[in-house]
Structure formats: C-alpha cells, structure tokens
Amino acid sequence: MTNVLVCIKRVPDSSGEVLLTDDQQGVDGRYVGFTVSNHESCAVELAVQTAEATGGTVTLLTVGPSEATEQLRDTLALGCHAAVLVEAEPTRLGPADVAREIAHVVREKEAAGTTYDLILLGNDAADSGDFQVGIRLAHALGRPVVNGVSTVEVADGHLTARGDGPDGEETYSPPLPAVATVLEGGVEPRYPTLRGRMAAKKVEIETRPLSAEPAGASRVRLLLPPPMPSMVEVLGEGPEAAGAVADLFGKLGVTR
Amino acid sequence: MILVLVETENGAASEISLETLAFARALSAEGGGIAIRAVVVGEVDNRDALAAELGTHGAAEVHHAVGEAFTSYAGAAWAAALQAIRESTRSVVVTAAGSPRGNEVLAHLAARLDVPMAANATAFQGLAPFVVTRQVVGGAAMEEMTLGQRPAIFTVAGHSWAVSPVEGASPAAWVEVTPEVAESDLVARVVSTGTKEVDHSGSLKSAKVVVGAGRGAGGADGFDAVAELAELLGGAVGVSRVVTSLGWRPHHEQVGQTGSRISPDLYVPCGISGAIQHWAGCASSKTILAINTDPEAPMMTKANYSVVGDMHEVLPAIIEELRSRGVSG
Image 1: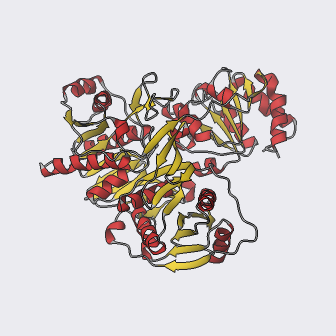
Image 2: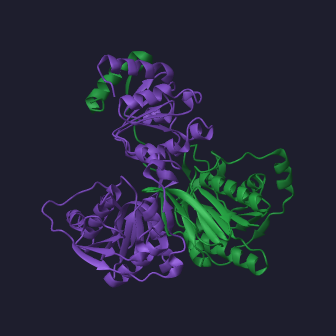
Image 3: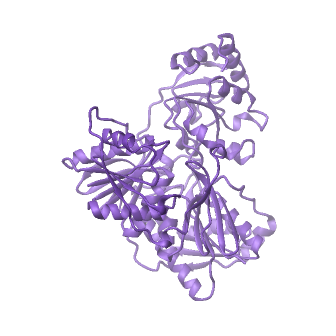
C-alpha cells in the first residue's frame, strides 16, 4: 500500500496572454483563468495510478490562496482522497518557503501516523519557474529525490523512476520514502468522471496557516518583454506563395 | 572566484555551458576581473582538448571531480562535488547552464547551503546589490531577483548569451579532485541508461530545420505533408501541445514550455496559433516562416515571414515547387 502526496500549484493558464499585477509582483490571471501546471497534471495521474495499483491513497497539497480550493476540488475529482491547503498569498513566498511549508505538513502528518512513501511534484511551476521546490523539500526531509522523470513505479520498498537524460532514457531506483519531480510526457492525465466530481465535493479540505514567516522570493519586480512591432514579411496567400517560399528556402540555404 | 559547472557532450563542452561561460566572463569583467574556474564531473574523454576549449572560453582552471561516485549521474553527488570545490576555491558565485542537469545540481547546492537560487538568468544588473533578470512563465515574462547571499547561485538560460571564444588564450590548468560523497547522496543515482535511439527528442532539439504543426493539421492523418517537407529539408517534425494532448502525435515531438526547446535555423509552424506554451519552446529559432489561415494569430505576427492560407493547400504546393527545382532531400 503506497500513500502518495502530490503537490500542485494554482497558476494562470498559459494558453492566454500574460498580464502582470499592478504592483509587478505577480502574474494577473483574472482574465485568462487558472489551472495547474501540465507537469503536475501528469504527477497527479502517476499518483492515482500508483495508489490504485497498491491500494493506497492520494493526498493533494497546495500552498496558495483560498481560491486554490478550486484546483484542489478539480484534482480531487480525478481519484484523490484528501486535500490540504496551506493558505498564503503566493507573492510573499519564495521556493524555499514553499518547500519548508510542505515539509512541515509532511512531518506533522507523519507524527500523527499518516506516512507518505512517495511525494510527487512538478519539475517546475508554469509561472515562477524556480526549478527547485522538490529538491529543497527532499533535502528538508532527508529523502532521496529524482528529478524530471516521466514515469514512476513502486515495488519492494523502492521507487523505479524513468526520464530522458542527455544520453538516453535514465532509470533511477532509490529506496522509499522518496521524492520525485515529474515532467509531462510519460502518462496521459485522465478526465474527471461524474462520480469523481460528486466524491470530490464531499471531501473536506484541510486548511492550515503558514508555519513560519516567509523569507520571500527576493523579487524586485516582474517585467514583460517590450511589445515587438510585427516585422513579418507576408510572402503571399495560399498555394500561389509556394514560389516565394522556395526562394526563401534557397536564400536561407536550407535546400542544399 | 566564479565557479561554472560545465556539462560535456561527446567530450566537448555543451553549447549552453559555453554560453554560461560567456555570461560568467561578462560578470567577471564587471567585477574587475574575477577569476573563473570551470568544474567538470565524471568521465572525460580528452582532457587536453577540453582544457584548451575551456581556456578559450575564459576558464583559468578546470576542477575535475573524479571517483566512483561519479561513474553514473546523481544530482546530489554532483552538488557535493561542487560544494567541496566551491569551499576550496572560496567562490562567491556558482553558476551552470539552465539545462535539466544544471538546474537540478544547482538546486541541490542551494538547498545544501540554504541560500537562494535563480533559475534561467538572462542578464545581471550590477553587482551591489547583485540582481539578475531571469525567465519566468516560460520566457513570456522576466523577473528581476536579488541574490543577496554568498555564494550567489544561478543558472543561465539557453540562447541568452552568445558564445565568445578568445583567440590565443592558454589552455585551462587541470586540477583533479576527489571530493568525498556521502552514501545518502548516491541513493538516487542513474542505475541504467537506455540507448540514444530511445531519446527521440534529441534529433528535434538539434535539427537545423523544424516543420511544425498544430491544431490546423485537423487530425492524426493531417501530418503527411508536414513530415514530407521536413524530410525534403533534412529536418524534424515538431508539434504543439494540443496535438499531443489529442493523441495525434507522440509527446517527444512536442515543442513548448513542457516539451522540447528548439533553436533551428528555420522553423515552419503550420496551423499553430502561437500561444505562450508553444512560443516558449520555439522563440530561439533564427528564422520563422508561419503558415496559417488566420493572419492575426500570434505566431503570424511574431514570425519573420508568413503565408496566409490552409496548410493542407500550401504545404503540397511548396513540396511540388521544391521538387520541380530539383530538391530531393
């Protein structure tokens, strides 16, 4: 029986335009809507598969605003069993703060008898892109961490995790309990079922305050790249443009 | 001292590691000539060639970590080596490429030293305070971040600095070190590596020409002309996230924030609107020719060249035109 903790983050949907808040401390997602990172969707799928295969449970955790209950409910509907919200204004937190808060919850839960053999996170958040929360978390808990993997399996007290490396597919096999950060690509996230949605409504989300004053992100400000005037040269319309395209390829030297 | 973790590919420094050395040299100059030390971990095929290359790119010394701990990759073990070398060299800055390995190892180091780390820096804004600009939201926005503690730890985003070799520079002096690595730093190490053939995305990332397709392909059977043009130009096929989500093409062909980052000489996105998710993966292309029915799509306005039209009509015409001109792939 493998109990999995999956950490997700409410982030602005990156299929829309990026706007910044007036104080330049965060991305304003009011108009594009919010979601969880693609990497995390895959982490959730891996968690649900692992729990199903071993008769274990999946607990979700997020550190974020009260509105993140929306992402917790949506994700609970995929077959997760419990959810924890550490409530905080996200712009006040740096990656080390987030890792410390997750570690704090894990330690408290484990002291009360709930252990997490496997903790999954996304490799990097779609908004802040810090690339470090999973590693800091593992360090805080004194557990091994595998980074950027796309599949995980649990057997005989070990995690087997695979991902793309510079020389081919790499396999890691650390002992449990362990932490893994997930990259999109190894599994197809499932869609919620009606039954799942009904079950998710009944789960009581455990809400907790921050365990310590955050150190912050050392962020001076966020900036958008200056709008680039469109420099596009239209080669033509429809099939008639083929000659101009072939000329361009010749000029660029890609047809040799 | 500035410490630069260098990754190697086929015995030579990776392109993005050389870009990181260029960033380090600019930082060195700003600080009045701070010495740069390269760090290489594990097996090295040709020490003299690598010492010469790294000397040319600004490193006065190479610290080479050797030992059983480094015969296969473990992020924590690499960080232990970097930590030991950083202590012996008293480096105030530790940097690496903003690659999967670079970001991972430096995150381990930052966690061990309990200092901040900035991922994917593209520039710095002076030294006191030391502020770096880094990519967030897949490069769609930038963050200015203060690195107030020492060592300052950051990685350098790919394609943000031009490689700049110094003609006539001396080879870097070679210093072999055998850092101690705790058993706990080796439990999460690579136990086996598949063949290179399994890493399908490798050819996409290094392709000089990429022909891309998005929702406009219309279905799993809508990629024939895309693949044919890619083959004619000796290139690779790249697709947007919606294509892999719908199961039309495999994930290893995905270009974007959660797929491959490409930087070909020519990228030809067809029927791709150009959302941030995709743009994050293709923004480094040298030339972009977009083909789309919607002239107002973001990809069509950001591209260097465009053809307004249905990819299913335009691509066959281009292929026919190329063949009539004797292009045969």
